[in-house]
Length: 384
Image (cartoon, rainbow, N blue to C red; front, side, top):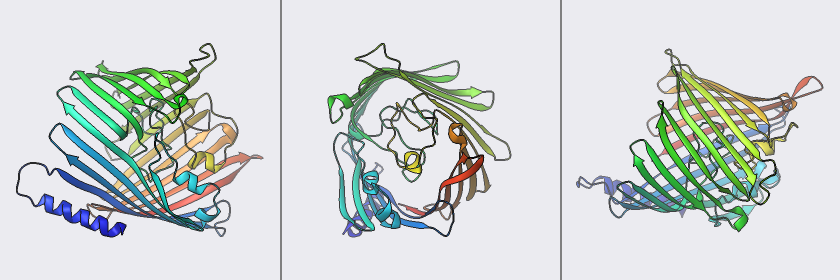
């Protein structure tokens, strides 16, 4: 039934595109279908666990006028394999709700099969002049950096969840006002399921010394929070940073939590791209976490990574316009933990992309690096 519905939507989109009018169609549908094959193992590659995912996304947009539009975006996922059946709390990980309302539905949850639909965008947007107002489930992206984003207090994401490009949304009201061409104010309010889960903050963005700056302050659940972020260049290298501070508003004198990240990136003339980033998270641990804490745990802006100190280096190179390779590594002094993240990307055509992705986790024990877990992912994506 889902595929029949999708086909009818595609026909609607094609019909809209063939309209001879010069205006944008009032109703549009976009999305993709992905197939992801996963193989996981710890030590020996002969002891494998497999999992497969068929992932369909539908993005609906209806424009009432040039000032007002509605958006509805749905994820449909079908998991089947040994990981679904054997992994503890696998269903809870897949169906985790990031918003005030539970807009997730399990159609099948039995044995090695899990079928789920989730609405992660459902909002109305009004734009006029200097005003931009959005109400509903939306992505409020206050982060600047690529790997760790301490300023992203509304929609913290897990870097290892590479298959979720759109990132989580939150149920919120957001008002943006452009002060000048290079400065703005933004107020966002996201009510939680309880008053202790509310997030409310005001952000001011401006440009100074050829840098884009942002400062914000507000309430993050049971904490007062404030932060600053910037993005600019040091000569030809990109330089970004974010710092956020949290302290309980009912016990303001208590010591607070600090999360800070820095990143540098540089593109060489021969096509090589280099990214270096670091994170300080004073609520992080010096102990070695398990793989579930790293790859599936729902993180928060206050404690956005299990480690206290983490460094990240990635190098990528496009061998041809359609074939790209990258190698990322993470390191933490906690157990001398080391993570290797290779990726190969091949663009079959404008709408077809093939990825081969690896995630290997190691930690030092008894002077020897031992594997904590490995994952190999083959993904085919068709966008429409």
